Amino acid sequence: MTVKTRFAPSPTGYLHIGGLRTALYSYLFARKNSGRFLLRIEDTDRERFVPGSIESLINTLERVGLTHDEGPRISSGRLVVDGEHGPYLQSERITIYHAHISQLLASGFAYRCFCSKDRLDTLRHSHELAKMPSKYDRACLKFTKEEVEHKLNMKEPSVVRMRVPEGSTTFSDAIRGPITIQNEQIDDQILLKTDGFPTYHLAVVVDDHLMGVTHVIRGDEWISSAPKHLMLYQAFGWTPPVLAHLPLILNPDHSKLSKRQGDVAVEDYLDSGYLPEALINFVALLGFNPSGDREIYTVDELTAAFDLEKINKSGAVFNREKLDWMNGQYIRILSPEELMNRAV
Ligand code: GLU
Image 1 (cartoon, rainbow, N blue to C red):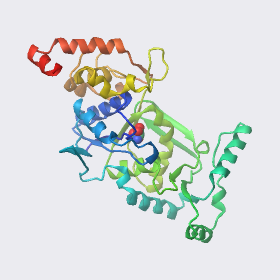
Image 2 (cartoon, rainbow, N blue to C red):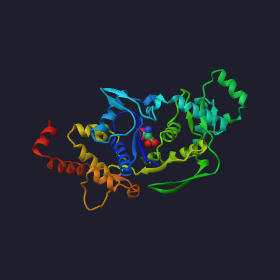
Image 3 (cartoon, rainbow, N blue to C red):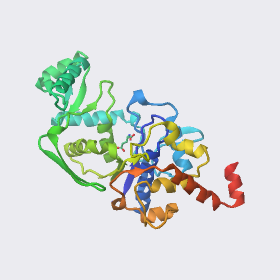
Image 4 (tube, rainbow, N blue to C red):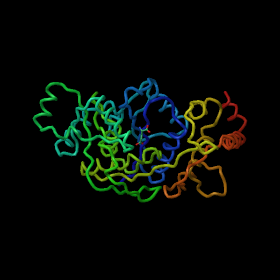
């Protein structure tokens, strides 16, 4: 089976340093295994969509040399979305998600929920007062098929929720090792919103499966979502991909890396004179070091050495001085002509 990894950013602004590391590791893993690297745009959250950010993400990935084999491209200044598993923009895949939702509703793995925001707020509040974890109480499960039909005919707004099965979910993360979670801790996640758009959880599972993704490499913030995703794979009768959750990137004081654009936007680093090869080398070492006896590596060397098992479990500190030092190393080995070209 061909190895396939993907980078699946949401177009909410600029490419974050953490996103660059996810994309780089996914790229290195695909190259190392003679596989394919796919780019997918996760734009189902219309409120957070920033116009122009898809183009800027693609341009930034290109500037640092992380070229994808499948997914959207810019051609003559326009966004082109083709490829055998496309479309690669989730907002263009809505009918695919609806077909899968129908399947889950028919098999009883999902159900319609008509609860108002007010009711859900009251419920959450009462859970807070009782110091209980807040979970949907499945009030809408009481409706018969006919009642649900009637409500839908009356155009009552609704969402579709997954019905979390009983028991527990176990998986082995390629970086963290075995993880088990009791399903009762998991809320009946909304899969389809009132606006007819899927949530991330449904879309990511359907797309990773249909696009043939074999290895999902992504940030640690998604690890708590993994059990929900695995339940969906099971409900569809699909084999899940290998999951690898990368450790956090930290500030030198070990707090979570800042979100201030000036500190973490890849395009800002490139625009202010950091060489792409220095940035890639630096970001590669945030959580992985091929040998430990040196710090300068070409992409080919990184590819040859890359191994999910070699990724650290603990957070990686983003050290700006080290980046400056590394950039200096790369600048010094440029020929005078090359240095002039780059400076221009
Ligand atoms: N769209 C998600 C993000 O922006 C992707 C998460 C994933 O890779 O599954 O981070």
